[in-house]
Length: 499
Image (cartoon, rainbow, N blue to C red; front, top):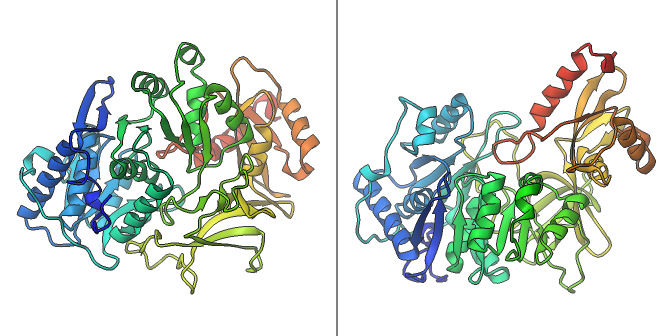
C-alpha cells in the first residue's frame, strides 16, 4: 500500500491489482457477486461523488444499516473518501436501539438494505443507486486526528457507545498488520458482521494486501463450511462461538475437505484449551492465532516473542514492539496480573458525545481496557476475564472465564458459560450452562465433582444446566445477559430439581 495514502478509504485504488478479484460476495443462497479491485474502486468513487454532489459538510456522519455485502464495503470507502464519517450500525439491534444509534451519531443519511428496511420502515432511507455518480474522484486529505468511522459497541451494559476512529489510527493499524501479516497469497473468509471491528479490520487488511476475500452476508455454520470448501479458503477469522457452532455440524464436516485452511485467527473472546484441541484435530494444517483487540484499542496489541520463544497454547502473545502495555492490580500498582492498559498509534480518539462516561484514558495517554490479564516470566500475556464480569462470592473474587476454561477441560464439554446469580448469603453464586460434545454424556454432579477436584470450592458452579446451544449476541459472542435471565427463571420455577 502506498505510504503517501492519508485517507483510510484509499486502501484500494490505483495501487491495487486492478484485474484481480477483491471480493467474492455471497448472498443467503450462496450466489456469487464477484468484484475486481477496479470495480470496487469505481463504486467507492461513485459513492463519494454522489455524496459530495449533495453538499454534505466535512465530518458529517453517514450511517449504513445492512448485512454484509461488497456494496457495504464500497459505501464505507466512499463515505471516507468524501471527507465524511462512516457509521456502520448493528442491524440486529432492536428497533429502539437502532434509532438511538442513528440519532446519537447525528447521521445525515442512512444507507440500508432490504433486511434493515424492515426494521426501520418510515425512517430515513436511501438506496445506493440513487446516489452513485460514476467518474474519477480525488479523496479528501484528512489531517491530524480527523475521524474516519464511528463504531458502536454492542450495548450489553448500558446504551451503545460510539467509538471514534481516525484515518491516521487505522491506516497505522493496516500498515502495521501488513508488515507482520501480508495476505497477498491468502484467500480469507469473512463471515463476522462488518459493523464489528473484527470483520471490518480484516476487510481493510485484505484490500491493502491485494488479496481475494470471500464475504458471507452473515455467519451460518453450514454456509461457512461450504464456503471454505468451495473457494479453498486459507485464512479464517472468527470468534470462538462461531467455530464451536461449526464443530457441531458433524455430518457436514465428515464429508468436507477443509485441507486448504492454513490460519485460524481467533479474536473478540478467549479460546479454551478444549476448543483449541478440537480445531487442531479438525484443521491439522492450520496455525491457530489466539488474538486480542478491542474497538477502542484496535487489533494491534500483541505479537510474537522478540526472542522467538514459542507462545504458550492459550496466550495471546508478547507485547507488540510498537505498543506499550502495563497491568494494574486492584491497588493501582503495576503488577503481573491486573487490568490491561495500552498505548499505541491505533487508539480511538474518544467516545462520541459521551461526557457522562469516565475518561477511558490515563493522564499519560494509556487506554484502560477493563480486561484482566496475567503476564508470565517470559512476558507472555494470558486473558483472565473482564473486570466488569468479575463478581464476589463469599468474599472471593470470581472470573467466569476461569471456571469456563476448567469446565471445557472435561472431555464431555464443548462449551460452557458461567453467570453470577444473586444470593442472600454469598452475595453471588456461580451457575453454569453447558453444551456437550456430540454423543458425549455426563451429569451435573459429575461436572461439579470435576470442578471441585481441580479448583477451589468457592469456584464450583452451584447449578449446571445442559443446553443444546448457547445464545449469541449480535457480535457472535455469547449473550451472557440472556443466560443470566434464563438462570434466574430456572431457579424460580418450582420444579422437583429446584426444591
